[in-house]
Every structure is written in C-alpha cells, then in structure tokens.
Length: 78
Image 1: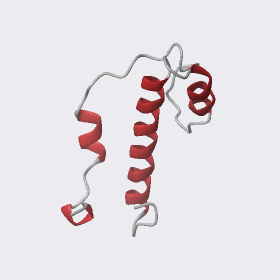
Image 2: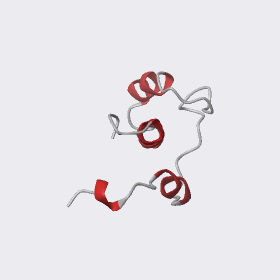
Image 3: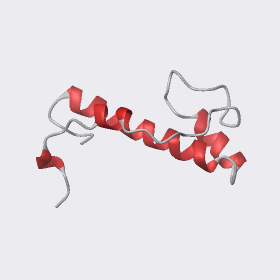
C-alpha cells in the first residue's frame, strides 16, 4: 500500500502504520523501557507525549482504526 496509486492511499497507510507502532510501543514500555523510548522518540507523530514513560497506556478503541481503514475489500488478504 505504500506504493499505492494515489497519495491519499499512501498517506492513510503511513498513518495507520504510525498508529500501530505508537500503540505497540506504549504497551511495550513497562517491559522494555529503554528500547521503547528510543523507538518512540523516532516516530514521526506530531501529537505525542514528551516520553513514552508518561504517555497514556493504550485503551481499546475501534474508532481510530476504522476511520483509517477505509480501503476497498480488494486490498484485504484472502
């Protein structure tokens, strides 16, 4: 999807990837604080906490993912 036909598809894919990595690093932080902090600081996200240590722990939500996942079903894996 990063090499998709439109810029909108590529941007949506980048946003979804950053969201998934952000949530993963916040969940990983209590177990691997140094690694998760280093990777969190390199994320290209504008609205993030100053440190993964003080970031809120991820809450289960469906709204963010469904707004980003508006691809046609042809892109889904069989």
